[in-house]
Image (cartoon, rainbow, N blue to C red; front, side, top):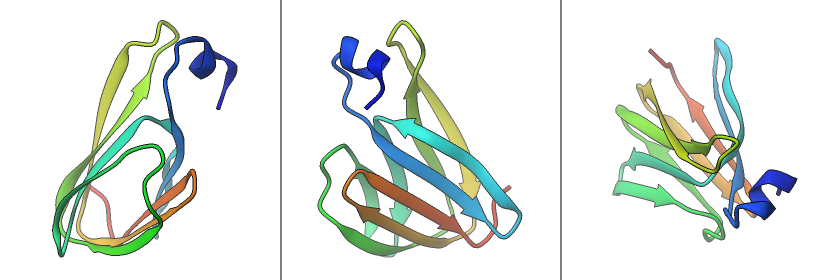
Length: 97
């Protein structure tokens, strides 16, 4: 957790969003919302480890600015894999728009 996260009491985890075109995001977030073959899923800090297949969706993740205000970002993915392992989360997209 970065110093600014600690000072604002914001729990975060490391997120990496990748596709065959390369990484589109790499950083700390407080939430990831994505659709899997099992339905919509929210990944929050401390989530149990898992691997899931994602389906076409507008994946959303939340970062925080220097004042601690949330900033929501959207990336369209056509499917792929989601991996949660401790505080490291990877969204491997087959293709992103």
